[in-house]
Image (cartoon, rainbow, N blue to C red; front, side, top):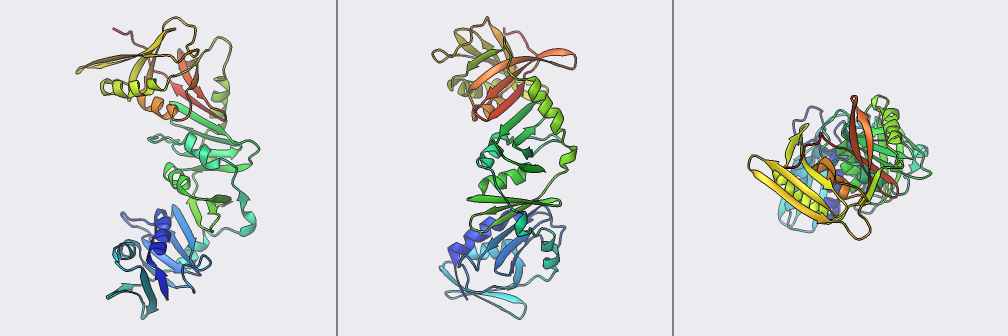
Length: 362
């Protein structure tokens, strides 16, 4: 059987999220499984299934299980475009030009394992419009809290790390209650042509228009305080008297420059913003020195206020800036103390950022 090398590489790359390449404790978690016209990978957390017969990559099914890294590296380094593959005597034999490679097949009961993540066709539902956009809006790059990841239910997608909350609405959507990890979110965002999803027991499956199925083991959604977080968001809805405005894009570059002198507050690197009618003053200092820069408001966007001081995380501000420039500042209470929350708003999203204990600017 002849296989086009570059097409096979594309399939193998799609399967890689299901390969365990580190300390392998689960038998077969570091393999590619060729069976029933598909390529499978499975590492007990993620699983991928890509069709190779119905898409025309090969003419008839191959039944073989081989070490993933060795197989991928072999295919990647071959110089020829066409590969002839045969299975014989417990080996997968590959020939390309003058090269011949024999890969030992790995014996284990993969069919019983894959049955645990099999999705019944009638359980599939359409993925809501802008679902991946919502995941991208809510994803946090460095969430080390016990609530890391993203949870969704019905029309709501939410994430939090205890200091910030991200929420995105998907109008008319009816999503199941699911909590997935950040690594899983990263892989879902890479899927092209995502069309359907299916929840079965502790696994959620995502299917693309070309038949690729990405499956991920869910977390215990019933332990995620969704009602409490939604309540906090409701308590921070904009009210009369809140400071409102639109930050200039130049502000976030200034914050990035100031972060070299950022101040450590509550284990976050922070900078100080002083909002006035004329401009926003960005300030930071540490023993090495200090940084100050004034950023003018865009025309007709400055709030009508006296000087107002906020200490904010430079990382949180960078995260929010990618999503919206429109904001309001809402007074709240935390631990019996008055505090201010900085809320960024988009068409379908809300991003709530905690501020830190204020210090006087020198």
